[in-house]
Length: 357
Image (cartoon, rainbow, N blue to C red; front, side, top):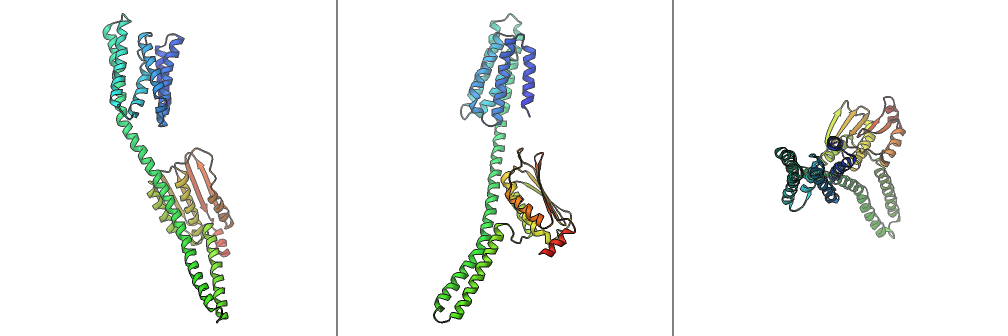
């Protein structure tokens, strides 16, 4: 946002001070150095370009003050210095003093090469450039701390989001354990009993084996349902879980209930909500999420969507087919930094879906 403004100010100063083409080139180098430093500073990578940008900007100020009549040639040096010095790990105070003294010394040296009014030279080449440079550097020190806190908060938010996803995975693992753990334990006991009775009660052994077969078959079915998110879900429980996950990740949640959700559509809507919650935590840099519930539909809108083509979301693609098979429609849209996921079962279709069950 600030880069075009800095470029415009720099271009204006070049136009005002430059009298020949080579002066345009020299002053333009100072502006370019400041823009490069600002772009790298915004990307938190200014250390790679700080030294060359400082050298170029310092040379431009020296040429502007001593060779050209360019009292605004310090523009690039003041910006580069204010961006680079607060990033130093050590001796930042000495570096700030050194840069300020350099600006003042070059400005004072102007008195040796000009016959202009001493007071005017001191004001235009010493006091103003030195004051501006010192002020910008001084302002950037607290700003640097502020941006550091913001960066720490962003990292904490990302860790919270990762933790929320991990909790969701743990919940899935717990469901899988509930399904298979109990069954395997019962199967183990029944097989042990069958081994004891194999020579004394063949009919009882046959009964135990039939029960083992039924248990294993039922477990396979439940595992498939869990893996494809077809296990019966409670929409209210999924809504509460989604709110907890978002709040743990530092995301504001707003829930609007326009009507009570149709019980027969609730299971699929719960699956849509669960999958969308996971996608937001994994793929977006969301700050707020709005969930709207109607009688036969749900809409989830989040900000923080990346300005890239719509990612491949296999879970939602699978759910789209399932929702369509049951007479509904799943919509996924990404626009202007927002991501929308909406599932709806129009009136008249939900009854047909109810009959299919």
